[in-house]
Image (cartoon, rainbow, N blue to C red; front, side, top):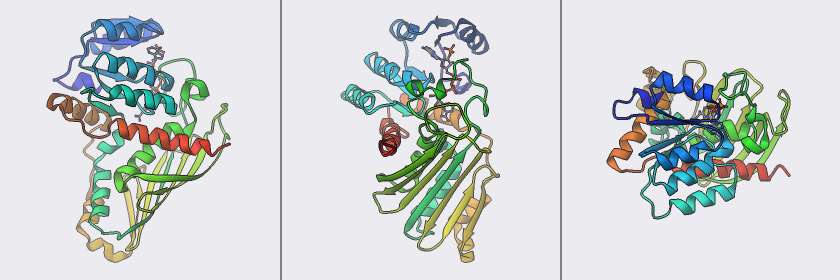
Amino acid sequence: MGYSKNPKCEIVAIASRTAEHARAVSERFNIPNVYVGGDNWKNLLDKEELDIVSICTPNYLHAPIVLKAIENDCNILCEKPIAISREELSQIEEKLKNKNIIFFTSFQKRYNPIFKLLKDIIENDALGKIISLRYYFSHYGPYKSWKAVSEEKWFFDSQKAGGGVLLDLGVHCIDIMRYLIGEYDIVNGINYNTSCLKMTAEDNCNVLFRFKNNALGFITTSWCNEPLETIDIFGTKGYIKLDLTNKNFVSYGPRKLKKNEYLQSLIDYKPSGDIAQYVLADHFIECIKKKTQENPNFEDGKRAVEFVLDAYSLKE
Ligand SMILES: NC(=O)c1ccc[n+]([C@@H]2O[C@H](COP(=O)([O-])OP(=O)(O)OC[C@H]3O[C@@H](n4cnc5c(N)ncnc54)[C@H](OP(=O)(O)O)[C@@H]3O)[C@@H](O)[C@H]2O)c1
């Protein structure tokens, strides 16, 4: 959708397993070339002259398509998680070496201006030294919270999804937390259960970790609850709690923080209505035209997957 709205962009081809799905999308967005079938994305990549490949298939196909796109010198926008194993991450990293490919990971939350306002507050020391951060992210899970395109419930198949709710939602949380205060250092613990969905991986998950600057991190993700997204940041001079679900409601303390101009900008913020996914796609296209690699890049995608795999390694 983002590409079709961008006048600098022409969608030339689409691949899908199911003819009916491919036809519906090609008619809707006026896409001339259609490749149908499980492996036909390979032919698409070989036959078409492409500047960009946008990968929004089930998770297990991300790395294979990324690897082939790199071979064919295409710039890449890949959905999260960009891979489901360390081997895949290494293969991609190796292949990207000595290539001038612009690689974006689809962490569109970074394009929600509210996080830039939060970052300004932190960087301008309004909260003092950051001691700890908590991110809570939930909804009712795939197939309930939105209607998936493919009929197969691949999100609940560990082989195809690579994990459960932590891999799906947790990657967004860790990416925003890294954006706000820097690199994570170590994952200390995980607990999880499977309480509401028929699946083997987790549908609820908590992860406890530490950042390189010594701040403490805590992420809770759930596919078994009302849609809710909150972030709490505690520093030596005060705290902020932001409820993104509830019209970006901000609470803070102590009261004197109200005088801080950066906090005031956050409180006064009114969303523009721009859809972060489209803003990300537009920015990606700009970066290709300017030949500049910006964020969220491959490293951001990789660190988010590594975070989840670090946490999963503690499951055993
Ligand atoms: N950034 C975000 O916030 C965000 C939000 C939602 C989803 N995502 C990510 O986007 C990806 C897709 O999720 P979704 O909810 O859109 O899943 P979905 O509704 O099941 O869609 C999967 C798509 O992949 C196609 N597909 C499956 N196998 C294929 C193959 N072998 N060749 C070509 N196309 C194939 C499907 O079409 P056919 O069934 O016709 O093959 C369908 O169009 C996931 O990685 C998910 O994590 C990210």
